[in-house]
Amino acid sequence: MIPVAMPNLEGNEKKYVNECIDTNWISSKGKFVKLFEEEFAKYCECDYATSCSNGTSALHLALMSLGIKKGDEVIIPNLTFATTANVVKYVGAKEVLCDVDKSTFNIDPEKIEALINEKTRAIIVVHLYGFPCEMDKINEIAKKHNLFLIEDAAEAHGALYGGKKAGALSDVACFSFFGNKIITTGEGGMITTNNPEIIEKVNILKNHGMVPGKGYYHEEVGYNYRLTNLQSAIGLAQLERIDYFIAKRKEIFSKYKSLLPNMIFQQDYEKGESSFWMVGIITNKREEIEKRLKENNIETRRGFYPLNQMPPYLDNRQFPNSEELYEKTLILPTFIDITKEQIEKICKIIKNEEH
Ligand SMILES: *Cc1c(COP(=O)(O)O)cnc(C)c1O
Image (cartoon, rainbow, N blue to C red; front, side, top):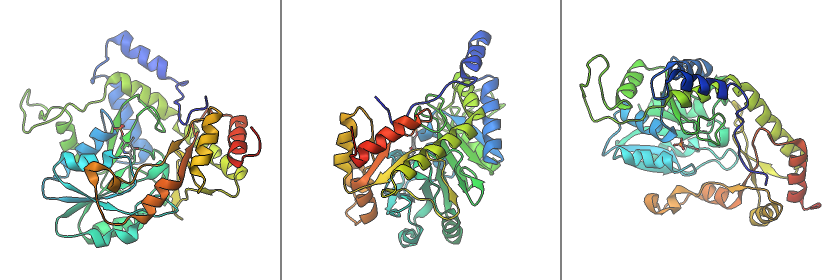
């Protein structure tokens, strides 16, 4: 079977994990936690990075650190992994869905302002499949209306916009290190920002609400959202090879594109440079192609359901672009160890040239 995603753990992962075990530092204290955070901040060219248990807890912590609460509204794209909406509900706020752009799959900056009212506190943008959002325009809107801007960069480690890294394009950004992401720790997450107050709040909230240096003094209700030294050891080893991972993904995307010249692919904005988490094509023959690939033991996945069509987030307004993209998107195998021959085989099957 050719899968959609698969991690590559051939660097220092094993060596660093063994070091954790040999030294007994397997929980959320130990040198790799700090090292991974420091290196990740450096990589994103951000002042601060703090780790947490997964991408969802990263988003939850970000919203809490900004004081988003009941009665507030947060604008999010209608096409994303549902956790972007769930975290808004966790803090008691309301998610306000915005349609996406048909060619980039990302939140349509032209449709944001109509959704802003006196309750709006923040916008969460999602760099879908590694393709960065139109950040100049969205930052301008956020500034004009005095809103917080949050990046859900769970799929976009290393993506660039105007030469700046995802994670450094907003007030606070959130990453996931789930097994299929650009770099992985198994399960894990990271928050990046240039704002020291946000980092201070997040560090308290993720550690049971305990105030550093005050023993077991809890200033507020906190969570245990910490990343372990074992996971950080894997993360550090992955981060050492991220440039190679992204170069490979770029190569995979180009290869598909050159072999499928008549197919429509997800596109970057002019200032955007995707890190190509996944290769998505848009086709009227989605079902047919999906079936043919499956018969040949090739895994694909569909795009995300529009949030407005699912029970927790129902919304009767029209979202024509997200609805159309859901119908037509097919995600092709994009793991970094896929061979040239495998891509050629997949493209032949898509074009129905031979089996
Ligand atoms: C993977 C993902 C998340 C959540 O990450 P977890 O680590 O699985 O909690 C959040 N947002 C988007 C867009 C994702 O793809």
